[in-house]
Image 1 (cartoon, rainbow, N blue to C red):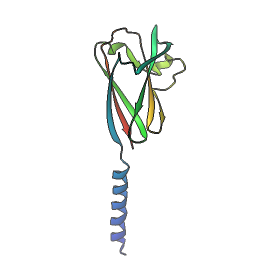
Image 2: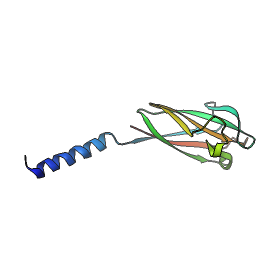
Image 3: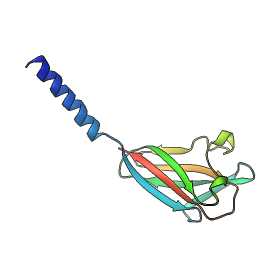
Image 4: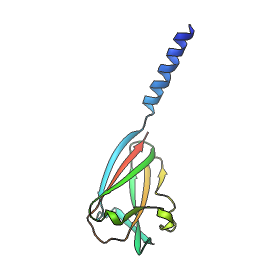
Length: 120
């Protein structure tokens, strides 16, 4: 096999593997008042830590969080400079599931928590 043909085959193999194992993204939205937004413990600046269970069809690799609504100025992802007590990470991954942690000191229920869940 010629050197050029071997190089082409290796490049094609590499590209096909990258496509097969590329991240996919699932979007998940949940309102602040949803019962699946679990209040945890007192933390932050006279606030409450909370968690949200997330899942995806494959192994989760990372999570991006945004917030929409009037309460969002008072919603913070953990660890937020140590304000989340024992919640030292923004999220914990376990295969195709994850738990996301944040805190808020606002009683305003008008917020939509938006997640982009990256998975393979």
